[in-house]
Amino acid sequence: MLVSAKEMLEKAKAGKYAVGQFNINNLEWTKAVLTAAQECNSPVILGVSEGAGKYMTGYKTVSAMVQAMIEEMNISVPVALHLDHGSYDGCMKCIEAGFSSIMFDGSHYPIEENIAKTKELVKICAEKGMSLEAEVGSIGGEEDGVIGMGECADPNECKAVADLGITMLAAGIGNIHGKYPANWKGLSFETLDAIQQKTGTMPLVLHGGTGIPDDMIKKAISLGVAKINVNTECQISFAEATRKYIEAGKDLEGKGFDPRKLLAPGTAAIVDKVKEKIELFGSVNKA
Ligand code: 13P
Image: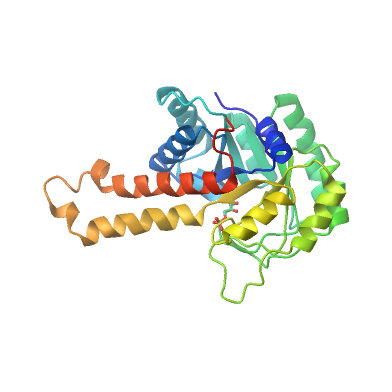
């Protein structure tokens, strides 16, 4: 059964660790993330971007697949199925499709409009028992064709959005999606500290988990980050392992072309990567 991310994130914030959101792209990805979370006895959030939702033919397919997999794989750790960087329309579709959590990314709207739309979704999510993530200050990098510059959020705007009754807050602190450029200045802990002081017990979300050095991740958790999103790193691990398999000519040996064999090393690589992150985030045995 899917759960809202509320309880797992409140526990994480209080216990000073973070729950990983790992984005899924297909059946193998989902199986790998669920396997890793179960083996680590850790709560987990499956993230679905609008692009990935479309790729998998729609949110209903994703929701049905994930719920069936939890049952068939006997997954007993808490799992939230979460829309990542949703539009208002995307959020409505995921609510209907049976997701247990959504992110409304209104960071590109003027703050008044972001607040107005977030407020409407707070009401709907409360009625449905779903968790809601809001965003202030756009996260840099490219995601589904949208390029942000990695701004730092205004702590007062963060407080205004946090007070609306959302479950968790994503705030830009110089983080970006995808690989970090060589001249990246690192996370702004000053901004994070100011945001946490204004928002108190609100679980904060760190997007762009790929490529942030371990010591910065740990410091961010100590300053109130309770959810960390990872996508690109799993994609790179999958691609590397698949490349190795092909380059070694394994697809040409026997039935090595069978997708169940061809995709196995990449899938195993995602399991390893997710376990590594769960250990770093400190959520092992927190199910
Ligand atoms: P990365 O792809 O940089 O890991 O970011 C993932 C993310 O923040 C999804 O919202």
